Figure 1 (cartoon, rainbow, N blue to C red):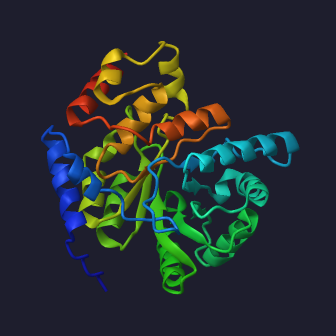
Figure 2: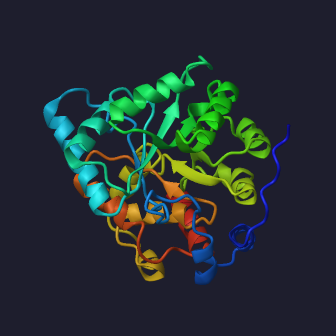
Length: 311
């Protein structure tokens, strides 16, 4: 049975207007930007912060006590700066257990928005894998569970809908990465009732702007941007160039390359959250600072694109 379309709310209408303004090269008015903020919330009811934390590679440190403690300090800095979404997957090796070790020391703050994934070809193993991951995290339930890279997405989504209806998870979604399988993702977004999609979006990978981000805005689907630094290559390349350009500082108070790259992403009205990964407290603080302050308008974002393309 085809799902009913969601009613057009004021928030939904403003997001559609925002997409039109951006497409036209116009800035989004501050009042409209406030109304277009993402609908998903923390357990406290507060909006989901726009900068989250990815754990691919960076938290896969096994049982090494020093490395585990270092990741605990990264997570501490994340929450001290008001962080919310932490994203993990069974694909990420020991990352879930490292998160669980950190949360056991720090306590589980109300601001945690726990985002996990299902990653198995066995369509009947959805609940079992989620239970295993929750045990590793040392939490009772996840805020969001996503089907990782669309693997066996149909049976997993069906199981996730049942879990959501039973109150076992809050939100469900699907993911892709590296710009892959966009056509299939578009079909799923158009046909399935989703709360979230996760995809690659950054200054050098903007394919999602053409169809996926407008569709997400139309359908009221929250969007998580993965690989915001293109696996670290983009920010390393920019840091070797010295400080950020003066025009970026003048335009939106840009202080660091993290500001430059992350604010470009989260300024897009269809983006809910970006999830950079880091293993260093200093870099975590830089990432979190990018979520506060003024955002680049549409004209400035176009200048940022031209700047990157000129390198």
